[in-house]
Image (cartoon, rainbow, N blue to C red; front, side, top):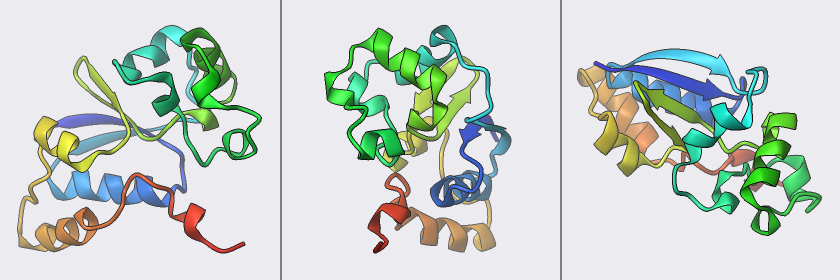
Length: 145
């Protein structure tokens, strides 16, 4: 299948589920820590494609939740500078296959790009369970405080 470079926040519940879904489809993952990667505006920008700046951000990042950072009010240069300084602001995961780079985990987009069909019956059960879940929104945002 496909070799995928997958940038995650270690311990993120949804990143764990996303990786399991990709692996159930037979893909090989090279997993990297999004938070310790040495980002520059030039290395980070290609992952965002033509998405608006506001969609580049991790909505559960403390600075976003507290409104210290308001993604809708930022230009591209400022957003990239903030994200390079604090990678927790970056929406996850970042995914790269060959030269193509993407952000987030939209099931339909990922399936059309690399395929999410399980490689066998055991993995089909895993894939069916995971694909029926919200793999984009952090489940911790729904927990009571």
